[in-house]
Length: 188
Image: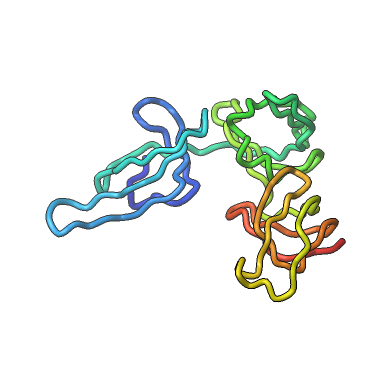
């Protein structure tokens, strides 16, 4: 059992309803009157829905230790994503609603980490940094600082993000999957 003092982003907990939740963000709050509490934003693992919940300071919750396995992303059929364990070559199929938000960072044949709860795959984690090719972007206009020195680019996985003006179609860029932001250009 963990208390609210142990909360950290990414921590997986099980609440009274038996469901698994990931802590997206949390904040300790101490009011002038009354007791302190922890305001959290939780993401339900099974369907990805996000909601806020307050916990009393010191309240106990069940922390869930998930088993990690390295796997390779194979393909999708639209409703499910298919992965292969790198050690046992066993294949896993995971419903798209569990992994849609992270799959925008993952190309076919890329390695990911799959987290299991009691033998059931519940989360997919991409590598911290990925390199993706820019497939569509407008040409950067010299002196265009109205847009803050950035423009929109579409990557090979369908991910759309803001990049510096010097990035062109065909460039390979590095992205931080934790924030979804551009890091650097790594090549053509």
